[in-house]
Image 1 (tube, rainbow, N blue to C red):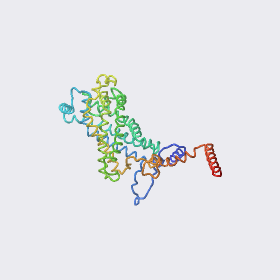
Image 2 (tube, rainbow, N blue to C red):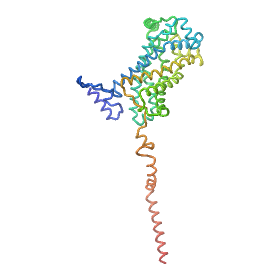
Image 3 (cartoon, rainbow, N blue to C red):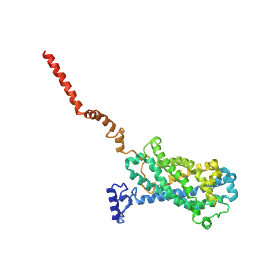
Image 4 (spheres, one colour):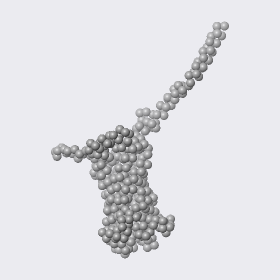
Length: 392
């Protein structure tokens, strides 16, 4: 363990800005049963990231599992608009053909796939956000906080989609292909037999084009909405709000973020559904076939689905943090050092005022010595001339 500490210390002495060693590598301490107390989890520690990943897994897995019926109808509208039409008609046709049990088709790959995705999405987001903030420093991290949210969420989703892709391929095939088996244990071997491993990952590129913008919007819009709600809507500081009030803000911000997410990521979502339905289709051929209007099929149901989904995910994730007593930093505030530099009232020093006061002195000192001497000589000559006139 000491080796890791030496490496971190050496890196920091050489100017590399990274989280401190204790925040990444935690040392276990033994204590007697009589005096042992559950120590709080340190922000930025490996245990903190692991718990965030678990909370994200629960939030994504449970919510996607709960809306499986809506997801089935949405996918079927995307791949067969003529048959399934609107959301109401889609439910009627699905129940008429498959019964009520048909609305649960694909629940197993949905739960497994999105649990894995949530683990990577939320866990890696916390990791990357902390790394990028530490690399920029306190002041720049505040100034560029929106860029940090965008970069951290994009980085996290890149890996999360790799976890999701296999189960997403199975889920869509089960829900949209009439000839596909209706269970995970039968459908997954069928895809592998027909297409090999590539069959599970052929939808990964469009999945990235759908999920990365979606997650960038999801996390950035959520973070900024929370910040604005506490600044302009909530009548008291976050520290004075109860846990239930804080969770209400979380749910509201999550729903607002979800609506934007649905719109931004909808065309790639249509392509993902089409690609996984037809093994011979390509992105280019589908874009030509669907046209601009076809790429927006099923947007209404998806706004309802994604808005509710995103709100519930953030609510579950934040509730998990509260239940596990994890650190929950408040919305970002401008550092005092930056306030002083910008001359914001209420700080101990106001830079612009100090500069204005110092300006006359600076201008006086900046005059050349030659000019000062000439002025002094003229003044002395005038005084001598005046004395001679008085003497006369």
